[in-house]
Length: 434
Image 1: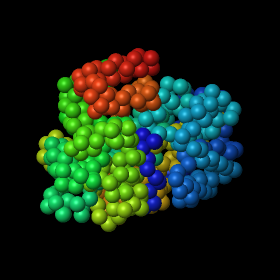
Image 2: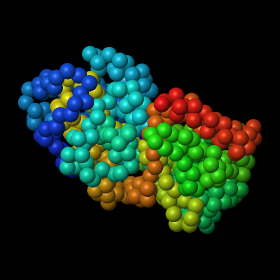
Image 3: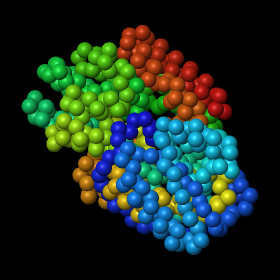
Image 4: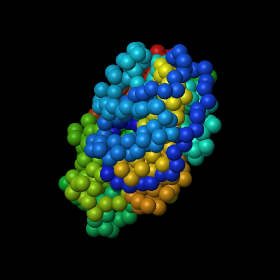
């Protein structure tokens, strides 16, 4: 997940199906610790959410079931701040004696944590787990590095197009069905209503921008022989970059105001009534509902290049992983299953609005809560993930893509020069990662 893009923990809806805490996980040689204790206390680090109490209640129920199935075993949960997770988790990798047995982690962190040697390979257990067969392929990809599985997906998050139904009705227009129509509609709205951004966009909104690149057939990077090389400067990627950056300007979202905006700011602009459209996540629903546009908006998948198509969305989300240093390997894997199983994910949707990673549970969610439907359709159309290289963390944290977008919209560089520079930075990060 792009953790910084989460607006607030949504307070909404879902229901999942069955825990398998009673199944014993087969041992593998990848323990990273001596022995495999079958009693004692397991420690778990989970992320502290905005409005964390509902999450705590779901987790407490999963742990109660786990403890009931494992006599003499206890599990203790600590909720850690998202903003300082990197330091805490890296420190845990370096000091196994003080490390927890399991952690929640953002799925863009997977490759980096694997390179650091912190996560256990749970491929055999995952493949033998009956519920895992219903895991969305993109969610499975988010826990996979080099063909091995390093955890279980907890939830998935994707973005779609929020739009103001009152504004569209007043102007006699319909939700755009293609990328070109999206751009022209945004500019038409701003022309008719200069006080509104047609479509709120952000120069620092990486995961709102990449669907434009993917929809035009571009890629962030390409893999060959386990190594990644930047593809952000390919002809197809540049078409997507041109499409996205064309939305910055006095005819839609002025660069002086919008170049520095990230995902939070664009959704806030929409929720507060300052934009007619925004690219927001399923996790943005609560923030929009709490805003000035409540009852005056709808959501559709972000359109692709061809009319009626859906642009590939970034598949964000979080995972639960077992640390290699855990002295309770078998128990830790069982607890991982309890915390990420269908029943728990169903309850987590009900409590927090987090989209399940199981296709059957997610389909049930869409039927139960209408707001989920466009996000489920987006996932079904084929979401995409970031390069599975530990170098991606460097690319992301050093703002390579936001810098590229900002250079273009400010007029400092054209698309070709800015994308070439971004590609060089990405290749350096991938090379350093090995």
